[in-house]
Amino acid sequence: MDAFMQAAFDEALKGYEAGGVPIGSVIVHQGKIIGRGHNQRMQNGSPILHGEMAALEDAGRQSASVYRDSVIYTTLSPCSMCAGAIELYGFPKVVVGENRNFLGQEQRLRDAGVEVSVLQDQQCIELMARFIREHPEVWNEDIGE
Image 1 (cartoon, rainbow, N blue to C red):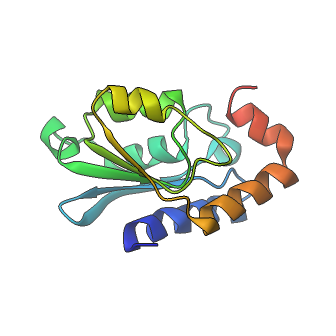
Image 2 (image 1 turned 180 degrees about the vertical axis):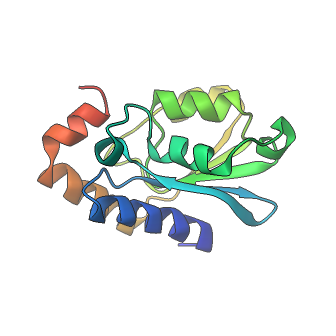
Image 3 (image 1 turned 30 degrees about the vertical axis):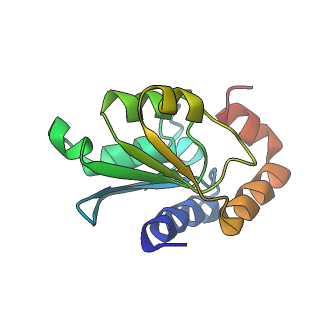
């Protein structure tokens, strides 16, 4: 696991330890993390604070050129909301920790010209699978089921 995916995984672990869905994300611009976050739907009662959305919120207002020159790392395949934000802000690349527990909108991103790299990282797979086993009702709510 490279340092940026490790940072995203650390965010996921932080979310898990706080009783939330363990999905973490970081935004990297020119080799530096400019935004980080984890899913906070449970902790904040928010319908939109998925990991990627929290990382965007943490990055704050940036010019469009910053996002077009950044990579977003996420521990889990992006859902339609997060994929839409990735597409909207013009990220050229997404690095995904895993898509075995949930296959999100990777094809939509590819169709929009976004490079999608899936690592199938064992730590990401195991943490998400553990959460789904422990809290299936929360997981189903998170993915809209």
